[in-house]
Structures are given as C-alpha cells and as structure tokens.
Amino acid sequence: MSDTQDTQIQSPRKREEHLSTDGQWRSFPKVPHLLQYVSNGKYYGRIKINGKVIRESRGTTAWTTAKLRLTDFLKQHQEARNRVDPPTFSEAVEILKRDLDHETGVKPRSKEYRLLCLHKIETTWPELRKLRLDEIPAPACRAWAAALNGKIASH
Image (tube, rainbow, N blue to C red; front, side, top):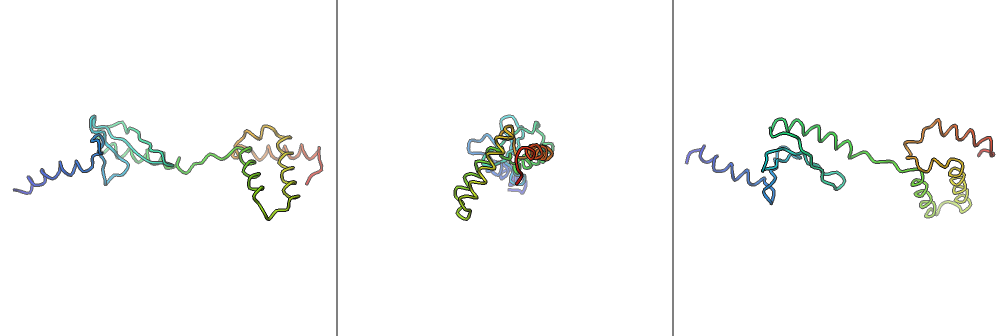
C-alpha cells in the first residue's frame, strides 16, 4: 500500500472519531466550541455558561468563515458569563436581615437600630424597593437624605 492510499483509508476513520454518538454533529478538536451539523453542513458555535449549553448557528457552510465568526460568538457569550444582575434593594434588605439574625457579635439593641433604619428608608422612599442596586443614582440618594434631614434628627 502506498502512503496516499494509507491516508485515504485513515481519514474517514479519523473523521468518524469526532462525530457525536447519534452521528449528527461533527466536532473539531483543534477548534473547540465549533460544531458542524452533518446533514446540512452548517457550522455552529457551542458554549456552556452557568451549566446551560448555548448553541447558535454561524450562518455558513464555509470552514474559514465559521472560524472567524466563532471568535465573535465566544466574545459575546464570555462577556455575558461574568455579568451578574445585581439584586434589587428589597432583595439586598432581605439578605441583610437574614445575616443580621445569624450575627452573634452584634448586640441586640444594635440589631434593632439597624432594622429601624431600614424601616425608615423603606417608608420614606417606597420606590427604592423595586430598583436594582446599580440603578440607584447617587444624586437621588443625596436628594432623599436632604429631604429627610429636614424632617428628622440626623444620625
């Protein structure tokens, strides 16, 4: 057998090694996150974020185009991976209350005072409960504090 015949025999076997168990998807070990749907030849990007698999078409059957579009796909989803929605003010208050209940190094009167302050914030600025922490602008906090300062003794 010549070398060319030998490589022709090995290449289909090698290609089969990278097929999914159902034979529908082909993967490429040298280009992770890139798959090819065997029946139509289209390429897809695949990434796992927070336990969820995301697979999107790269809109092409050309290998080089798929590789180029894969980098954009990965950038987009890897940036989203680190992005976490901040909690709402009411969620943060619940976390604080729960932590305060389990805190042993704080005197009971200090706990009561902190809860009283939270109650005052919630009653004087009711819209705050619905806002996410990153949506609360500093000027609005200053305006709220100035308005409240005129009504009660400041601490």
